[in-house]
Image (tube, rainbow, N blue to C red; front, side, top):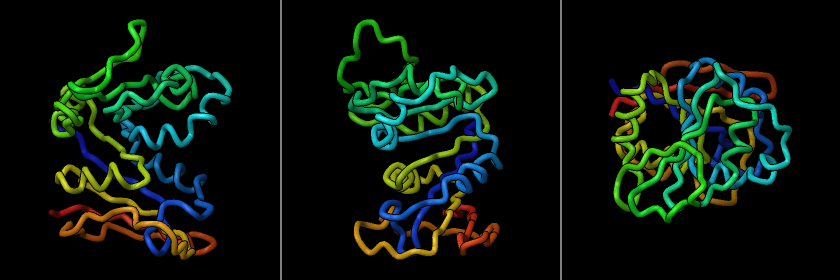
Length: 201
């Protein structure tokens, strides 16, 4: 059975995901509501934090934590062991496609290969469901979430909206025609607004 997919993103009032100080403490506190089995992220999200990951204390994997699945069609991520040792996830899973460049012969990271040039997200979710995943939380700057919305694979959208207008850059999602049903809103100190929506089409 395919897992429930919730996409979570921190944005400004004008829909940007960068150029402002996001309330990440609040963001990750709210993320615990879903108790996800899998955290799904794109390679760009990981690469943006690679130096921080590399320098972080090696805590080890967290047995009770979710699985970290990274979409890495071009095999750009290198810090797999460091990601595993951050203490947040039980293990890491590289999501590759058939045409993903060859990995080092001594690579030990678990892999799931789907699709030809790009990862097949339908198949990924089917496999994760078969392996027992009930909830997948997508953590992305927007590109990965937009793709999943286009494919009709997102069940719930959660926005942590910050009271700031960035102005520069493109909005986090260029997807059109997605219908949403409001599921709840909460306003926090400082004007940060937490809004949840069910994706209906």
